[in-house]
Image (cartoon, rainbow, N blue to C red; front, side, top):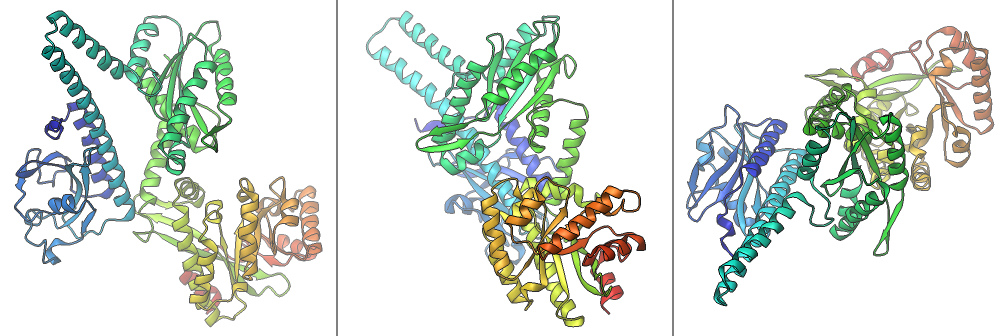
Length: 616
């Protein structure tokens, strides 16, 4: 039973690994990425990427007696990072450095039993410390390779059990026919596992493809492929454990059996991905589909209880139509997956495939890939727009506005990259960059201008959910000797869409430090007045959409006047955004506003231009 370490890796599995290795090299922009396999006396290249500057080929081997970084990774069972082997006394003479690959990042790969299989590693021809994102990506792919080895090991164990059983039958002198029957039984088990999910008994993607080819392609009726994804299953697994997530998978499987008509072909693609094929029965496929989709939406919109825990399921549904969106199973499967991803990105109930979705998702992928390195490559910066006192028209502060210039994409507008940063989780790190930069610059300007000069910084919902936010802001203010009253935090109503009590606690802590809090885009939402009453705001910012039409819209003039009057009654400062001419400024002054902001007084500019135009 110990011979599994010599198992041959299947071609399909090697192809999957090849894709992972190519992806690692592309994302990290390195010439070489490898999966190495341990042999009794050597370690050899199992899979390698196809970069033209990659010196390694499959089958290349090095003796374990050599000074090998991969051997050190296997021995220590820890990640090894060598940013420049040429500057390392230990690694300067290792074989990789002799090939011109001087930096290394590697992780051990093990069989499910804990025995070493080898390593997965990245190598670069230049000094490279490898970013946290690249290390996390390597860790993710290590786990995926080990999951493949687990499957291979389980298949091996099953086959070994079959062999062992056959040997037992031979020992008790069973007849040949009984041996054949036993073998046939084992073959049935293997065939079942090939086309079915062990946990739920659901058909897998291969069986679904067989059903599609047998029932849909041979018919002249239209059909639909519906892709259902449980979007929070990974979070459930991480927070509550594998047993809970497996229960959710089985729960959803049973739920789908009850929700779907018998004529539907169901399959489980992965623990969190289900697919079903529905063939048109009446004259209108659209109406039939909407009934099914509405049943799925309502049926999966519930809280699941298990082992004393309660979890709210979140899901997305992607739909592709046959033959409109594809004439083959794989094409339809791909397009329904694209639709599900688009549905998940925009928090919709369902999404029917459209050809433009592929382009949109590719654009988003490119945007997200570039944004991952924006901070490291110093592509992000702050522009500042001046704020002027209405009474004296003197400069009193500035709003810090995030800007991104990427060598490949050029200038990318905040309306494009900030939602991506939010959805991908990068906004936490980017938000701290904004706070650090703005507070440090505020200290510099106060030294040149006066102590009352202030800076406003926007915070996103993701940042407000970060438990370290308030302590970090306080530490930054203390480090740069900036009074808390000189900083203003701006938020919009979308921060209240989730846990309002949690947001209130954070804002109260910010307010307790003396930091001012502004409600941005005031008047555009449905609950602005209730927020003003409940949360510790010191400022409201009238949305530019009201200001831009002051000269033509009597309703807007009444609304702006009412907002300013209401704010004054609550003892709140009022900032009028988007002022573009003197007439608008005069109206705000007559109405009793407090602060001007807009192109009439100054556009957002970089820090040097702001200092030259307004400070010096």
